[in-house]
Image: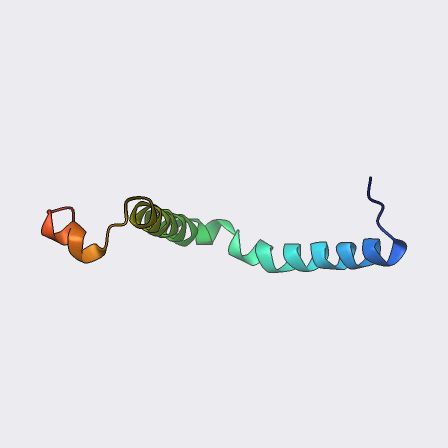
Length: 68
């Protein structure tokens, strides 16, 4: 069982406020399309790298077999 100190609670509160301060402009409705595009791109990169690690493929090997 862990217990956070008063100083730790203060730091946590400050970090939470900073996170919210920085996140709000990014999550504004006018940024929705850009955020969705970034999310899609990052998911694609994640899948690419996961497959490369899992199957030991390189982009060159994938190109040779027509995957790219």
